[in-house]
Amino acid sequence: MKTPIVAIVALACAGLSSLHGEKAGEAEALKTRTSHAALAKRMAKGDDPLANHGKAKPLAQESIKKKEKRELGGILSRSTILAHGGFWTIVPKGSVLHTPPAYKARLSDKPVGRLLDWKEFYSRNRGWIFTQTVEIANARGEAPFSEEVLKNHKQLGRVVVAVLHQGPISVRAPKPTPPAATPAGRK
Image (cartoon, rainbow, N blue to C red):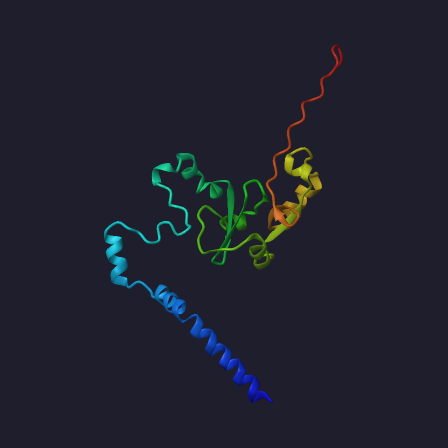
């Protein structure tokens, strides 16, 4: 039973290939690749075969504004670098709430080693980093930390990093409250 079906399929394929034989030869001619020497000649003449291959042209160096050049390194200038054991990460400036003298060297000026994201760096260094969950009001400087919290930071003996939703966040210093005005004539 299988033999007649295979024979019919084979005959059908042979018949179709003879009908399209002329076009198949043309398609083969189009599929041949250009040699390296031919491409080199075209490139020497200034004809770049890949110039308009759906890719955007590179920007001229003059078109990059000075401001954009300054911003390339700006993230490190707005961050604090924490480093230890050949790894480093960045946290926003103002997110490190307390640093004991023993760990001052772990706040680095230059990144050295391999960059890790915050979660991985923190998981490797839980022994010397403590995360203080803050509220948005604390981060904005609208609500100061209590004296008890600040006292606990000093007693921990670890670097304290402010976090919100498990990510580091900078904390502004609370605005000083103006002294209450005393009514005239009273002391």
